[in-house]
Image (cartoon, rainbow, N blue to C red; front, side, top):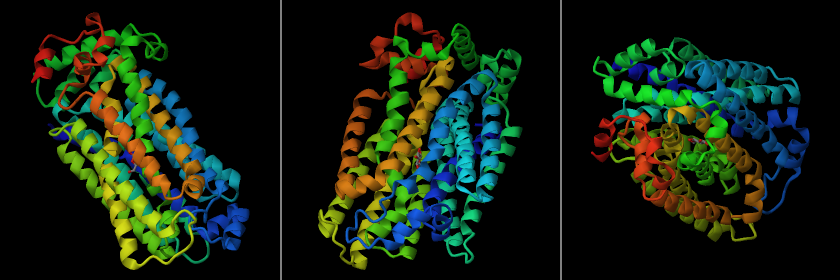
Length: 498
Ligand code: BGC
């Protein structure tokens, strides 16, 4: 691998920062008294007056979650616009638009004087995230040499986790600012990752795949030689040519994607982000402070626990960076699934034993509480080396060029949609399902792990424009793809059978 490609991928990964920063910042801000008092006075009053005995229903307020969620709707819709920009004008432009819009959103949010500004800012943040998540994973998967595609792509997830962690720390600091403007700092600092990403997008080269798709054959060849660090790129270049010829025959990627031959990839583009959210991870990411308060930690302790899960999230991601191209995607999915299931059952049971179904408040001993935190960490670690990174990597590498951009926007939209749903209903669900909520997500983990076992073929080390061969060889999906649908070169066969 050349240092040029490494550098380009590191810079592009910074696109994950804006997403992560936002995930991490909202939960903390919406639990700051000064913020609630200013923008959601009725929620604040309700919270102050709430002396209900049930530990499960303490923070049950939909208004509170509306603020968090408006962003996801904007991201969902904008990823479709991003799909067109990414395809027609290149991955780089989408990243730039993403960074700049996010920057505008953070400025408006930091300066907000009313709820309207708050929501407007959040919609802009959402548009930024829609563009970033649509373009960055695809960019990384196209730039990377096949044997390192997993490692380089997971830079994106690593930056998401760094963003979440940084946001947790910042909230921790700003929550104690006297004078009630701490939330402004939290929201305004989103400008930092936005600037990093925008500058990165300005200087990044475009991918050879995209250059060729847009008709710049010479530039594409030169870029491929540059990023591979050798002139000997004919085989890969031939595949790119074949892929871009195919792409030219496709007038509308949206109607095309519905064809039978794309059924395997379309299924994954929908189910992988759906399953990723149904692991329940964002209950921890958004509501860790609330959740820890609910299970009996004091205010300070709950923020500290959020910081602990943040650290685990970052460091566990390195496990997948180090192993994804050797052990493969499937091994990580299956191991991570098993580990998540075990920890969910343990956490659910521990909470259930203590609070039962009535949710009567009982003091948790330090030891008991620590064991709960420990298993939450075990769960977060498993997610961080399986569904977290793979939920972005796998969709970005399984589509043929002609529908890659459209496919990725489907992934982003489904991801945002279910993130939104979980953000909306979690507090209510905790109130009604109580500790059973952990079993609920555990049940989904069983389903998704079985799904991966039977239906996801291994894609490690296969060149991105040759993935079609993997689908063709799969016991179930193979029948959707006719021999005439395969245009990549002969040499490809020896690559996949190796
Ligand atoms: C998911 C986010 C999640 C984050 C946690 C990402 O892959 O898409 O929803 O909050 O991982 O690290």
